Image: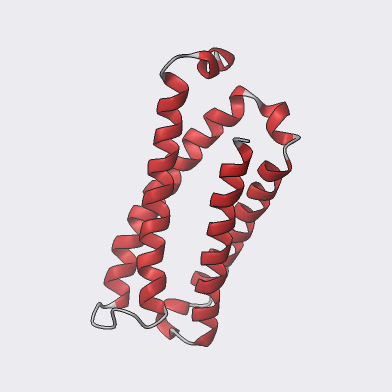
Length: 138
């Protein structure tokens, strides 16, 4: 069935659209929080913004992950042999570790230099994920 998904006229492109929408929700909301941690939009309470943006970002991640797993399942051997895919998976792991470190150390309460650096690292990692995702297609 999964091999048929790749060949279907509209199913695979629709799956790609879901993946992109998930990425947009994830990255757009992370950027809003990152800008706040960097000192922008200081009038916005960081805790309230974090509750809103992280909830939407997690929903976006769930969409991207579910659609990504389905796309992966259509051609796992080819993707595992693709350096961009392997790098993307490594970057996703790094993003998860960075997020765990950020929240584990209570960076939202501190908004210190370390928190700002963590957010710069987050931005760099997620940009790398997007670049690798586009290179997978080629």
